[in-house]
Image (cartoon, rainbow, N blue to C red; front, top):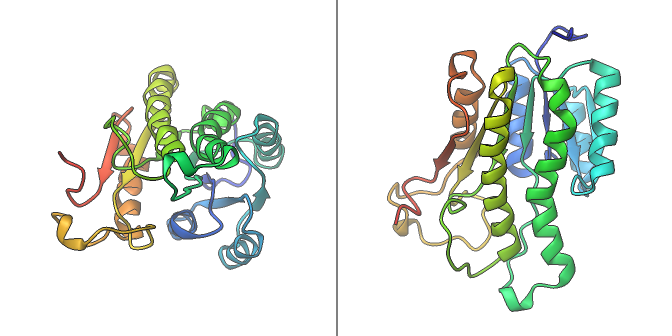
Length: 241
């Protein structure tokens, strides 16, 4: 068991410069975690959040590039020695029809979801295995377990389905080391792009960031160590057909 140099639980949240990632980082901070932030392009927002939360570090990088993920993991190892929780939240959503996606937008959708989850998880696993309560939480999408046509952001949706497969595969391979790997999949959130009518959601409302955190908070509890490889859909009953 590697020693945590700060003697508090540490979490790395990718894509935490704004939106859901920022909310999750703040929620971890309130729960007593030392927070390590990451952003790809929203520097000013990430830096401001880091100051407000007194974050341990703020990293920039495209995690869809393996060398970037490895460099961040190496720096975390040098500074802290161990990591307790990884939240793979990053993802670029391009609200365009399939035939209108540029090659850049295609690769952004795939690399910011599936590739970044694979590279970051692989790079940080040696540190998470050293935790007493190792947790990996992947942020998915409420339709990631349902194959079918998509109107918008095809590469993003393909990537999130890939993240679900990675969740189950890493859960199977790491369960013997006491690390659990689970997924939390939001439905329509208050900040979602191109929202449908609330009347189409059984719960009658859009999801709040707090709803997602409630699921994450359950999964990181020591008592939840028998929950592994699960996909918790937090969608108010949306996408059940």
